[in-house]
Amino acid sequence: MIVDSRPTDEEVAALLAQLGEQFKALGAEVGKVDNWGKRRLAYDIRKQREGTYAVFEVSAEPSMMKEFERQLRLNESVLRFLSTRVPIRKKARPAKTPEVPEEVG
Image (cartoon, rainbow, N blue to C red; front, top):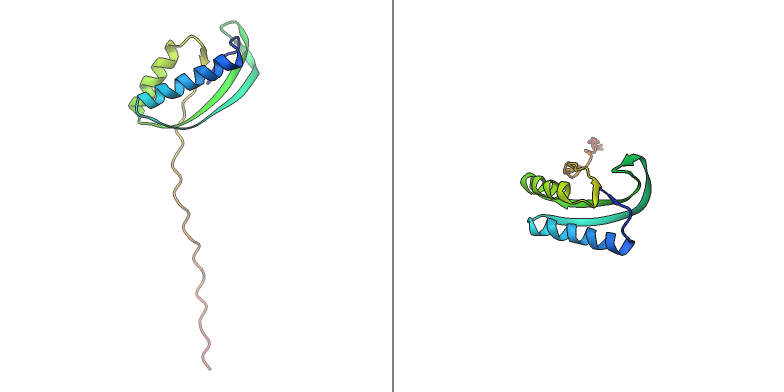
């Protein structure tokens, strides 16, 4: 997500903590939150040239994500957000070793 860059770093950290608590209140499991800091935007969003980027890793049901996205749209500090689904990786099967015939004799 991209957050408005005008608030101080402490206010942004508080906002991210609040958003994490909203996730938990909906029943989601928050894995980690990365604050990437202020970066220049490719184009102006709501007359802003910079934004603070943050990444949430969350495990949640689709209905929870839909409600959280609704809450993000209502939050004026959030300029943009993008939710993606990361497929669950299956454990790799051990490689089959070719059978070597035993020599008798």
